[in-house]
Length: 346
Image 1 (cartoon, rainbow, N blue to C red):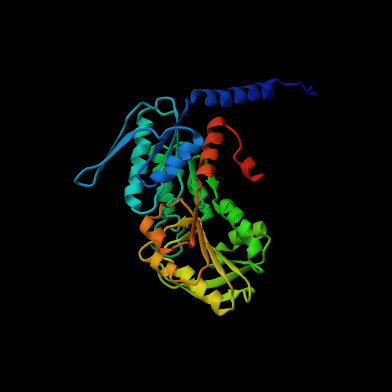
Image 2 (cartoon, one colour):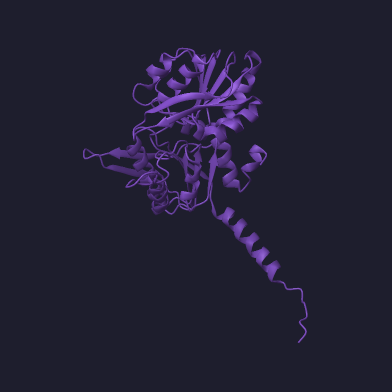
């Protein structure tokens, strides 16, 4: 039997359905509604200013037994809602605020809920690297989904595989474009700058930063010998002698790695040292340790709020760049169904 090839309208129908579904999805979302937890109120207001929208009212009450209660001031039925909440210290308070706020919005029939996470906690716990330990980053992703989030947005998670822990779509952004633009403007005043990563685990991202700045790259080899935050810097792989060094890491927690890295490159003959990172966690006495270092400039962002008292300890050596234009632009593009990759020529 000979088969006769006929031009089927199935593909056209499928395309029409897809087109109708996509545009219908955009139509059912109302206006942008912005909510913020108590984790990063200043950043949230800056994002709201960029988007030209007001932060929506909500009550967040902590009872004497430390239970949290949230109530919205107005309905979000059918709206496109974005929750801006960093999960830095106090980590568990901020995380629970996020989860309860997501569920509150879900139960009030929001059309779409996006969790905007300038900093996502527990990203270091991304694998079972020894017996009898959890993968807490996966647990956090699961909790955000179960609470009712439809999408997520996060900046520079410590481990790239965290993206795979989410089953919902999301945007993984980086604040390093802002930082490298700022550093690039400083390069004419530097002598033979070299990008140095604080460990080999950051080598790939460090290479990308070096490519953007058109500089060579070097690496510090360090080893973590226990389950705490301590690691030992061993040697520098690459040339730093008589060069200005740009030390890079995604986050600074206790400052131990940076302290060792700065001392090591100085021992190897480095000239001026610049330290850059996206997430300034600055736990415990990190700021005191960092302020004592022979560093010309610290450059970071506002994904994690820094108290005025800590800022003062750096004197004039701390530059804080705001990620609010980046987050705000992505929110606008997500709401309008436009490409985010176009922002980075991707």
